[in-house]
Image (cartoon, rainbow over all chains, first blue to last red; front, top):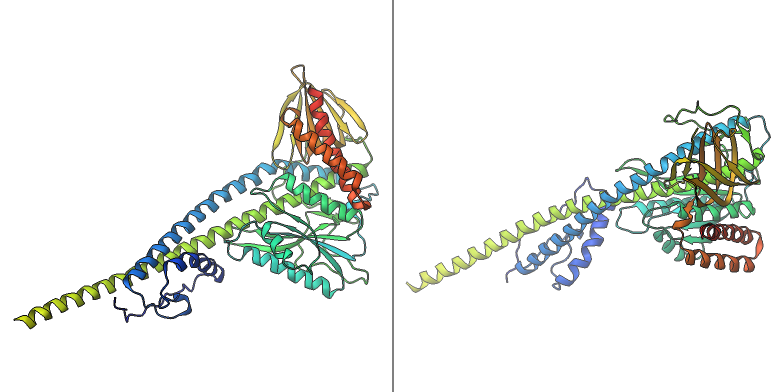
Length: 374
Length: 133
């Protein structure tokens, strides 16, 4: 079998992000390896031209076809799951809306009282707990990587400030990452389910709550991927505890240890009192009775409300993280499918050319032979 | 006058319909609520909610939260709520035993806090089943 002297460079689309081509390559390799034992058929990624026989080419086309089918299917699955994740958010909305409404009303009525709830207790920060929310699976572009990088950056920052830290890892990918690095103190590994539920959020909240209330840590930060849109998501750091306004959380030396990009709190304080920041979509609260009585002390009521608020915050973070993961997987798989399509096109063109060259060669041989006889 | 009960958890709406009477376990003890109750706000303990509907009592295990009563509207916000009839008795009993064992071996302030919470949750679930039978 003659090797073609044709050269083919598989173009890597300039519009593709690094992550998507990465995910494609890592997916392609296992399929390539068994079907190609000839060393001349080196992966085209390194820029070397393909010198392949017809049979190898056919094998490659088949493997690319298979890969494309799989990436296409994964894309569709991710798309369907995004819809389910959105439904979960919508289902949780009545709860969170009522909670914010109630919290706002109660705070308004409690303005005059002096409140000291344990969850709002601001102490000098000596130790920080980082809750890192990652995904359970790979093949979703740079999703897991970017949140882990963010966590590493935050850890380095805390180290620089001379503060102690501990990590609570949520999600399989984060768990394996931190398990491989025993020098990072991890308080707890939590594995997520396919769809985040209140139980899961409760498990995280319980852990965070007991860490904070027992004064083992003085600040809890939540690192998760914020869902902006289907094509955009940002890893963010969000101060979970103490429930307090932005900034003003200082370490022993009085230097501010808040992350620069710390997200603005929904629950804020105004002149030393708790208030809830109004959303643009806030529901009407006019029907709320002004002659409301409190069955217990306001402090106790806040004690009951704040864990609920904490839980719903964590649940929302989990849901957003899942939505981001699925969206990232969707776009990674869609660009992998595109890539596979292009690769397939180029390979089949090469294959056809070579087949034709071979046929032409054979005809020439026959004609030459016939000529020689006469 | 009818009384409307709405039990909300972060996941879903557990209950949203008219009821005759409810008994709610608050932080300062159980209170019964009938139509035209005075508007109050109360913290809800980890405990049992009993609902009277068509002269039948239904129990529900509530995992701590908050309730607001006014205008014949009861809004209960809780972390988790389970109807007594939906709980698997064997599983609940097992969880209770595990929780009890955990509390006895808990060391330090933090573990005790965690174990205590878990135990109370487990106990409530078992109680919710036993109320029916």
